[in-house]
Image (cartoon, rainbow over all chains, first blue to last red; front, side):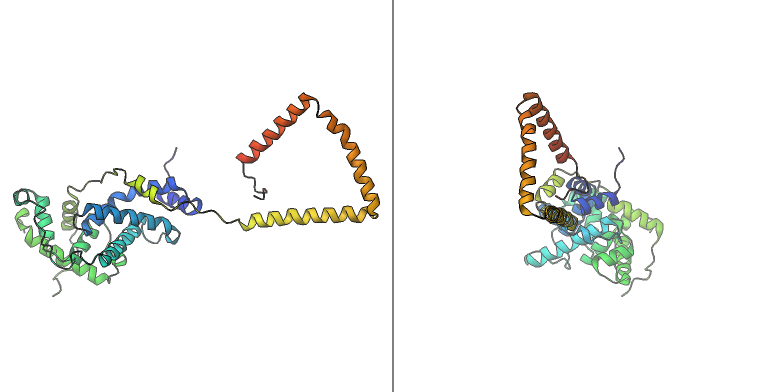
Length: 181
Length: 128
C-alpha cells in the first residue's frame, strides 16, 4: 500500500477528521517541534513537551486554516513559537530570553572543553536570544530567510542581520575549531 | 552596528548547519504522539447535512402528494373506506401464510440481510 503524502494526510484530517492521519503527521513532525521548543525553553524538556503537545492540539483545531502557502513544518513551528511566547508571558518568572543565560552549570566545564557540541552550546550562550532563534531556525531547522521572517514576524533585513551577526560572533568564538579563520 | 556582510557563504553555511545539527538526531517519539492523540478534543457530532434535510423534505412532499391523489381519486370518503377494507381483506390470506415457519424464516433472513446491508453502506439517496 502506498504511503500517503503529507498533503493527503492533511486533507484527510481536514475533511474526515481522520485521527490516524493526524497521528502520522504528529509522528513526522514531533522531533522538529519538540527540538525547537527545547531550544526556546533552554533545556526545560518537560515544559517544551507540554508546549509541543499544545502546539499539535492547536494545529489540529486550526488545520482548516492551513492553506499550504508555507510548508506544514514551518506552520507548526509558527504555532510552537506563539505557544512559547504565550507561556512566557503567563510565567512571569521565566528567565528573560534577551539576557545572556547565566545557567552554564548545565554543561560541565570538563565536557565543554572536550566536546565541540558543548563549545557550540557555550558559544550560543554568548548570542542574544533573537540571534540564537534566527540561527536555530535557519541552520538547525533549515528554514529559509523568508520563512524565518514570516514565522517570527520580523522584517527580512532583520533576519539577515541577526544571522550575519551571530555567524560573525560564532566565527570568533569557535575560531579554535577552525584554524584557517 | 550592521555586520559587514549580510550575504551567506554557502560552504560556511553548510558547515554551520552540520554543526548545529550535530548530535541532534531525530528525537524518539517515546509515546508523545499517543499523548497528543489522547488529548485531542472529542469528535464533534456532525450537524445534519443540508443534503439529508432535502431528502427528508422530498420524501415528505412525495408522501403527502400521494395521499392527496388517493383522496382525490377516491372522491367519496365512504368509497375510500370500502377500498381500504377490501385491501385489508386481501391481506388476510397473505398473513395466514406467515404461520408457515419456513415462510417466517425466509422473511426473517431477508429482513436481517436488508438491515445488515443498510448498516454497512451509505447510499447517496439515504436520508439519514
